[in-house]
Structure formats: C-alpha cells, structure tokens
Amino acid sequence: MNKKKWCKLQKNIVFFLLLSVNTSLLANQFVLDLAYQVESGDYGGDSDTDVTIVPVLLKYYTDVWSFGAEISYVSVTGSATVIPGSNGQLFGQGSGSGSAATTTSKSVTRSGMGDSKLSLSRAFFPEQKDGVFYELTATVILATADEDKLLGKGENDYTIKLKTSSKLGLWSPALTVGYQLTGGTADTDFNNTLFFSVGSGYKLNKNSSLGVGYDFQQAVIDGVDDYAALTFNYSTQLNNDVELTLAMKMGLTDNSLDRGYSISASIPF
Image (cartoon, rainbow, N blue to C red; front, side):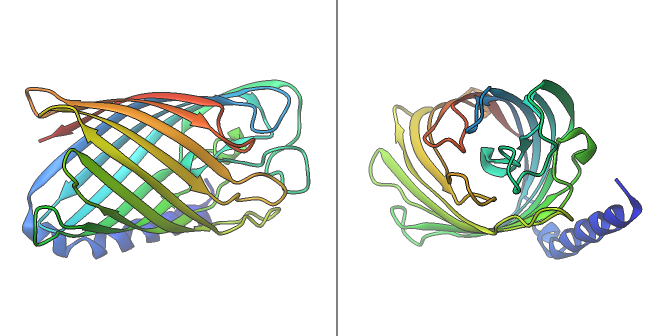
C-alpha cells in the first residue's frame, strides 16, 4: 500500500473514531463475531473460482448506538480475472474492458488480508413489543487487501443502509435497503449500486431458529448480471449465550456464486 493510500486510510479511521466518541459514554457490551466462509462459482466464466473468507468482527453496543470493526483473511483459487468484492459479488469478471485484473486462463492461488470494514449504527427501538425495529448503518470498506495479489481493487467503498424488522408470532421478517458508493481505479470506473435483502426467521424453540433470505445487488461493472442469491440458515444459542449459525447460500445469476457454506459464532463479553 503506497503512502497516499495509507494517509487516506488513516483519515477514514480517525473520522469513524471521532464519530463514535459520544457512544463510548454509554458503555454496554462487546460482541465478537467469528466466521469461516467458503464460496465457489464460475461467475460467468469457463472455470470455477473458490473463495475462502475468515472474517473477525468486533462490535461495541451502547444504548442505541453500535460501532463495528472487521478484518478478514481471504484465499482465492481460480481465474485471475475475478477479484473478491462486497456482498459476495466479484470485481473484474470476464476479459472485457470492464475487467479490473489481467486476463489469464491459468488457475492462480493467492491469499492474504482482505478489505476491512468500519461501521457505525443507530438503532430505533419500537415502543411496543410487536412494533417495527429500525437500524441505520454507515460503513466504510477500507482497501486493505493487496491489489497486487488481486485480493482487492485497491480503493475504498462506502455504504449506507436501513434495516427494518419485526416480530409476528414465531416469525421475524426483515428488510434491508442500501446504497453503495464504489471506488474506481485508474483503469476502471465501477458502478455505484443499490442493494437490498429480504427474509425472515422462524423460531423453533427458546434457543433455536431457522431463516431464509434473498439478497440482491446491482452489478458493479457493466455487461454482467446483477448479483442475486438465496441464503438458508440455522441458529442456536448455547448455554453460555454464544450463538452458533450454520448457513448455506445458492446463487441465482451468472454474476453470483454457485454455492456457499459458512459457520459462525457470536460471542458476547
């Protein structure tokens, strides 16, 4: 990472730290989220690309505010014409003018630190138990991945999203709508995109639930399909308040993964 990008990264970190100073006055709880994700697909190409992601997310909750910081390890095996991106969507698919990577038919394995994330959320709790919950979140996706290894495109992204959810008996429907400002490179202008997620959980018992969701995001480059995928998950809360989640993901377009699996644990302390 060159000096100019490092200075830009420092400014983003300082901005979010200053923005979250007031939240530290109402200390409540830390939560550590650990996950192991495996995704695979041809993304419209001739061969599969396998992506393994190990994210580590630390969240700090207050009365109505929360602050998150995430780092990740990424390993990619497959065509060098695809670069890990946000929401499972890859940058630089194919060999056209929109590609952000050198075109090659050879399978390449590269690994290292992925992009990092800083987020700040404000929750709006309902007055009644069966009311609607709202949460507004701003996120900076920091370009900490090594672009020379094709683990990232080397520019920051910015997102703003609004999540709404409610409880209807054993069901807990939710809807998230957001917008991403996608940082372009010297060679490629990426599209700013709309995205949304809709789904619901279903409570099996006091500690366990099932969930299904649909994710959509406009394509970040021209000439390819939008991203769309279905997710199915099972969550259970262990005796020590640790929540364990198993998930399976299925892509619905050529610009999406074909299949994905993950296991994650949410640990409060």
